[in-house]
Figure 1 (spheres, rainbow over the protein chains, first blue to last red):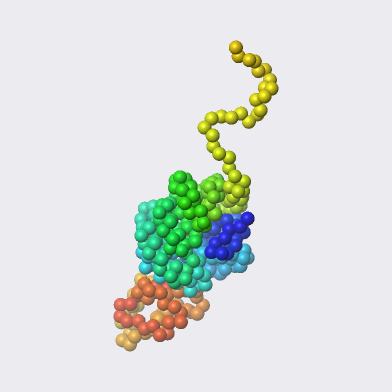
Figure 2 (cartoon, rainbow over the protein chains, first blue to last red):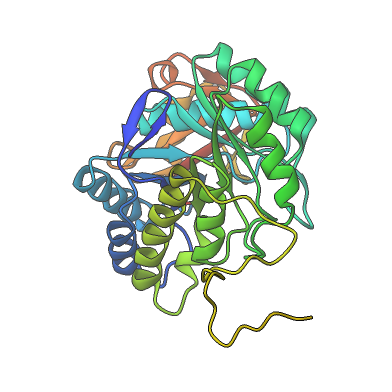
Length: 265
Length: 70
């Protein structure tokens, strides 16, 4: 069972971030252990006399080659559609990919996406030939508008970036899944533990994108494996068909010929 | 003529316009060894346009490089 993003088949349903790891070596081990084939990265101003960014870039290129994967540049830090469009074009030149994790932040406190600027940016970028993966809130109408614009992949948040709070509003997320049955839905941001990822897949989501939950674990490599297994469990649970909840208890053990049973008069 | 590169002011001694290529030589010791992309006054400038794009007083370049991201 594989994930398809803009027509590209991927063996893993995990999209993984490359930031916050204790070291580049642990980052590489964790990404490889996760099984992910999509790695996010970004562009920033850097000291021209330091080569750290250049080294990280070479390292990420090696990883992507090793996993036969795909880079997913983001527009982190952008607060307007214009900034995001400019950064997207700069990323495309460097990374040679049309894929883009579109982030346009509207509030510094909880890093909540700005839905207005996000729509403006998405429309422009699609016209410019980008394959846009927008990071957005769990607002059904916003997700619908992004899908109608041509975003085949929609990435609603589970909770604010880096909080690890998991799925804040399962009802909203389930409704998005129900109302956008043909969209590729990736749950992005706020995932804290493997069971969060499992739950997303059990709900019918196509994948998850996360960074902090693995990078900030005591043992990132082991946590990466755990997420990979949680995603497989969630996917298989969804495909297998989850039983309907019932209001009252039903005995699992057959009641016929129950020992010590007496007819009450 | 004054320009800014990544927020840092650069005072150019001559008054003639300089190209993006020339400005980048002020910023990097070896531009050809680095991976970067450029925006001029917040608009993307492709590599093919560095030589032809001339800077004027007060222009601002952003020179961005790959970094880890989530």
